[in-house]
Length: 135
Image (cartoon, rainbow, N blue to C red; front, side, top):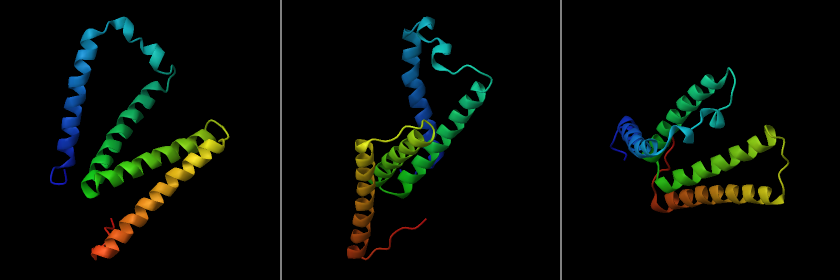
C-alpha cells in the first residue's frame, strides 16, 4: 500500500461501496427508507450531511496515509484507542453522563495497551539499532 497513491485507494473504496449498495437499493422498496426516520429535521440538516461527507472523506485519507507510513497493527490500535477516548470524552462533555467504574477501568486498559505498544516499539528500535520514525 505504501507505493500506491492515496487517491487510488479512495477511488477503489468508493467503487466497492457503490457495488455493495446497488443490490441493497435494488432489492429494497421505497418504504424501507423513510428519510425522516434517519435524519434530524431542521434547517441545519444539509450542513450536517455536508460536514459528515467532508469529515468522512478526510478521515479515510488520513487512515490511508497512516497505513502507508506505519504498520497496520499500530494504526488499528491507535485508531481504536482514539475512538474509545473520544467517545468517553463526548459522553462526559456532551451528554453529561458520569462514567461508572467499568468505563474508567476500560479507559485505563486502553491507555495501558497504547503505552505498552509504544514501549514495545521503542525497545525493538533500540535493539535493532534503527531510528524511530518521526513525522
